[in-house]
Image (cartoon, rainbow, N blue to C red; front, side, top):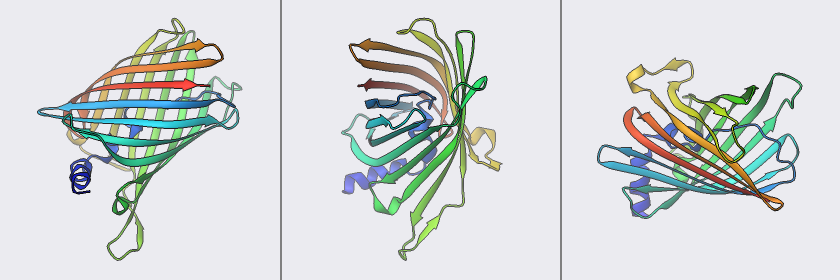
Length: 245
C-alpha cells in the first residue's frame, strides 16, 4: 500500500494526461450483439522518466446505438511493476446513423480510483465522424470533472471542469492497413484556458486495421505521438487491440 501511495502521488498532478481518452480515439461504430476483449497500452517518455499505463477491458454492443465497456487501468513508472489504480465504465450512444453527412455520438465515462480518497471522475462530450471519399475525419470534445470526498467524509464536486480534444484523419486504403494522423490535447478549464505553454498537445502518425478471423474480428491501432504531455515535452507510443466475437 505504501508503494501504491507513492505512485498515486506521482501521477496526481497529471489527471487529464493519464485519462485513456488522452491517447485513444473514441469513434462511432455499430457493434450490436458483439462482445469484445479490449487491450490498450500507452507510455510517455519524459527526460529521465517513463510512465506507462496498460488497460484491459470487456465491452459489448447492447444495441446498434449503445456500446458499453468496463476496464481496469494499471500504471508503471520507470519500468517497475505495474499497479492497478483505477476502474472505468464507458458508455457511448450513437445519436445518428447515416441520415446526415456526419455521425454524432455521446461519449460518457465514469472512473473509480482504487484509492478511495481520490474519489470518482466523470467525462462526457460529443463524438463527430464523417467521410469524404475514402478519407475519414474525427473530432471529439470531452469535459472532465472530479468528485472527491473531503476529510470530514462529505462529498464535493471539483468545480474545475477541464476540456480535452481528439482529432483524426484516416485513409481507408486497405481493411488491414489504414494510415492517418492523430492529435490529442488538454487546454485547462473549459471556460478559462491555461496559458499555451501550460497546455498539453500531442500529435503524430497512426495506423489502423482489422481482420476477420472466422466469425470473429481483430482490430488494431498504433500511434506515435510527439508534443507536450502535462505541459512537459514527451514522446508517447500507443497501442490498442480489440478481439470481437
